Image (cartoon, rainbow, N blue to C red; front, side):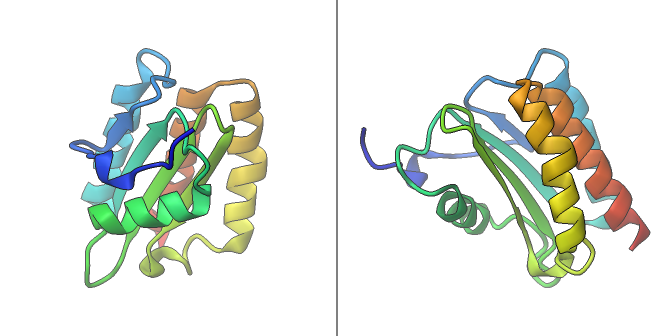
Length: 143
């Protein structure tokens, strides 16, 4: 197992399903919600799925990818990255500082325990990502 190489990853769109885990029909729905989030709030969102991180921690990988792609508007730092490593069975969402008050610890915990965790255990990746993004959109649209 080699060291995970962040430099080899390049995203060209809002949804980069490198692990091919998002069910048919869901990638477009997810993309549409991401476009709507940016239109309503200016927040930028990216979803990246990978097969494996090859030993790198999900936290480190998410942080590096978030910064590499500059997700969010620079001045208000309003980006969201959802990173999923399918074979490692891990996910993480990284928030720009501008969203941390809106998506507080209580909401983050609810997103993980009520949506992401249960849906991922059933391998319902597309529905989980879609529900996650709709909750995020609802929260930041109100704030």
